[in-house]
Image (cartoon, rainbow, N blue to C red):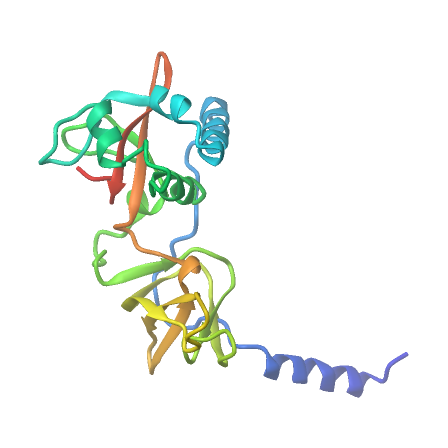
Amino acid sequence: MMPRFVVLLLFLAAALCSPPSYSQEERRLAPVDEAESDGTWISFRAQLLAAVAKRDLEYVLGVIDRGVRNGSDSPRGVEEFREQWQLDAPDSTFWRELSAALALGSAWLARDDQPRELCAPYLLGKWPRDMDPLANGVVTVREAPVKSAPSAKANALLTLAHVVVPVADWEVDDSDAASKQKWVKIRLKDRDGYVAEEQMRSPIEHAACFVKTDDGWRLTVFGPAGRD
């Protein structure tokens, strides 16, 4: 059996080598899916994700609400939606953006002039009203290393988990010109740090909202911050 003092030394060494956890008094925004108890939503979401993965345009067009909102300056309707997102183009960003939104849970959102909608990701419905959505972002994973420089090789200052943090720059190139990795520059209490782009999300990024009808779930709006 290993002597107790040796075990203690190994434990202390491991603690010193690990980056500290987040200790700033920032707001936490843990992921939720407020419709997880509704089997119809779970089934619909799975089918929609499968259709997005296959780029099944016929299925997607079939679940878009006829009065889908396309922005305050654009007419409603499926044809306008199709044109705005260039759904017939092979390089349309629609598929990537919708998949990313659906992967991050959902929350109910009530607007003054609209029926209650279920919006994904959950950030749209859960964003704290006292925090500026333009100046902050959310860490969307349980353990996001905050690097001292925009590089995977840089030292980790600490780790973050589902917290709202001030953002200084949403798209910073990696310090290695050959790397395609992008970083988000965040403000810490005493210095700046960098989090991998895919581990952060802005509350004003694309959100998809849905309503449950007699004919099933329908997409009512999809765009920056759920549009209008």
